[in-house]
Length: 307
Image 1: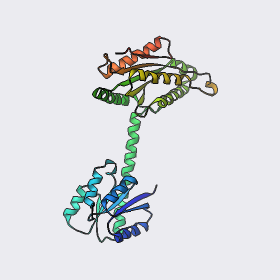
Image 2: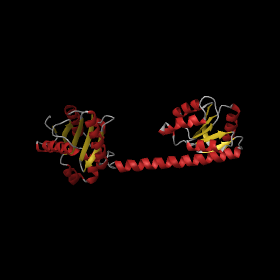
Image 3: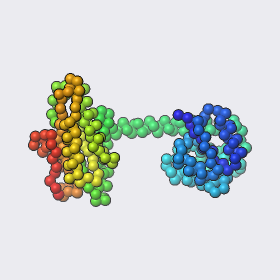
Image 4: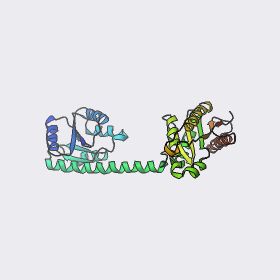
């Protein structure tokens, strides 16, 4: 993907000089111009910019005010900014660097120096972007069950703690569904573990299909799953659970496994409830409802008694 540059300067001839120098190379695929800091800031909000060259002295919003605006937006703080100035005062340069500028160019500057400094900042930006991407991947791997691509149990407990606290703080309902596939051991024993993995993946797809944007789900362990439903009371959560139970029972497999049918038992608990004061209480009661569903014949939804 081609890099992009934004040139902010109130003098047209300076902008044209910079553009001519940069266009003599293949560093950038897109070029943007602005005549002051405010115009440049609006461009940054609407375009993906890799490097900014910004004059310090401009009418309206100057370079220092522009840096202050950048600092107010976290998503813009990693963009390298090279300040342009016609003054040699050390105090001006230090002030700019302390406010977040990446480098300085003193006017008039040679094309060679401009290109050298821009290349350095592009390299740094590329390294930062690669590191950020790898960190996000590592974070995802640490939070996700690799087979089902749902949250793993450890991360689910973190999310559960946050949602439980939020629900208690703002006095809003919150529901937990515990889902367990019925007779799953027979699936592994009869069809093998690879087919068992496909069953777990198919179940996770059905789970994702019933989730709202702000719900979350996890593989709790083995063939057991947990769904976290913020803003859902007990009755609403039971409706979701029934829809999920039905969807799982309707999963169709192909080929030599076309006769395979799976079902799930689901336990539902929700707060507020007079027997739930902690996360452990919520999980325990949802588990209890799940085991009641198992004891009552499986392929069914059971709920804790209302508060």
